[in-house]
Each structure stands twice: as structure tokens, then as C-alpha cells.
Length: 178
Ligand code: AR6
Figure 1 (cartoon, protein in one colour):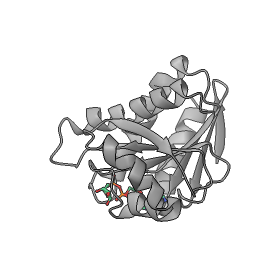
Figure 2 (cartoon, helix red, strand yellow; figure 1 turned 90 degrees about the vertical axis):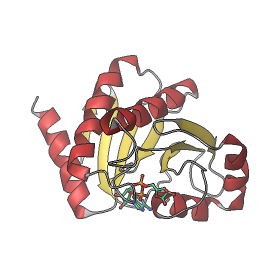
Figure 3 (cartoon, helix red, strand yellow; figure 1 turned 45 degrees about the horizontal axis):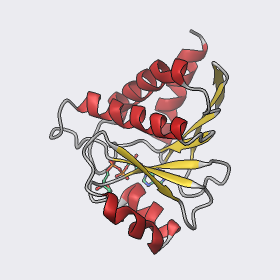
Figure 4 (cartoon, protein in one colour; figure 1 turned 135 degrees about the vertical axis):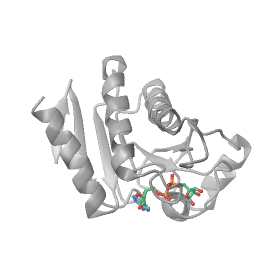
């Protein structure tokens, strides 16, 4: 599903964040050490190859809410923006830290003049953030940032399950009817 808001195309798909050749940057749901780990981070490091972790190592550790940029190596993208989401029930306030992830990622993308980027559902896997709560934070945060965005033309949300796809599509439909 697609929707254009203030000249930015939003797209919501079910898919794999490591298989998004049309996007200049993809976002990693990272760990503090920026190491491979599991979930999105494991998949991204596996697909990018070992040079990614070599570039990551000196940038670590990062704090919850923080984001850093690297090259994407063997991924079909130019950059990876690594973002550390909050561990639900541990890093507080969770919603503010999750919002900071999305804000900081958008800020880096703007600074680097990145025109298209893809987000997974940060913190909603191993970090335990309920997806139905996270999706509200995601859309509230991204929509609040739109007035400051000039370079980004496409934001794609790449979800791993039908349930998450449905949550995101429901949000996008709500926005489209105002
Ligand atoms: N493409 C898109 N989404 C995916 C993919 C993929 N290839 N793989 C999983 N997801 P998670 P977190 C979904 O756990 O909660 C790692 O070990 C997944 O179903 O990757 O921020 C890191 O090293 C879920 O909906 O990220 C950290 O230690 C969402 O992406 C920790 O997990 C996020 O799941 C980060 O945990």
C-alpha cells in the first residue's frame, strides 16, 4: 500500500529488509555493540558481509535512541543507518526512546541527502516492544518531522509478518482519510 503525504511517498510492504534494491538506505534494528546478533541485525550483517562489522566496531557502543550511518557493502543499498531501539520494560521512557530512533534516523538521512529509506519495525522483535503500541509512535514521530524534510522522497516500512503489515496499513488508511 502506498500513500503520498507532503510530496513524500509512504509505502508499507511485507518483506525482508535485506532485499530492498530500490532504496538508498535501510535501517538496522541494531544492538548497542553494532554487532551481528539475531533478527534484523543478523540478517543485515549476513547479507552485507564482514566489512560491515569492521566499519561498525569503532562506532560502538551506541545508546538507546541513537543512530549511526555506515556503508551497505554487499546489500543492494548505499547506506545502512543503525539504530538502537529501547528494550521494552527496561530502557525508559520507551516511547520517547523509540521516537528518538526514528527522528535521529531521519536527521541523518536528511544530512546525507538520502532520498529513499526503509525501516523495519524497530524494537518489536527481541526487544519486546508491543507492535500495536510501537506503530503509533512510528507514525506520530515521522508525521511530526515531515515539515523539516527536504531530501527524502520515499519512506518504506518493511514488515516481517501479516500482523505487522495489517497494523501499518491500518495506520496509513487512517491518515489517508484524515
Ligand atoms: N526484514 C524485516 N523485518 C525483520 C527481519 C528482516 N529480515 N527479521 C526480523 N524482522 P528484531 P529489535 C522483524 O528482533 O526488537 C537483534 O539480535 C521482526 O519480526 O530484529 O529492535 C539485535 O542484535 C520484528 O518485527 O529487532 C538486537 O540485540 C522486527 O523486525 C536486538 O535483536 C524487529 O525485530 C534488537 O531487537
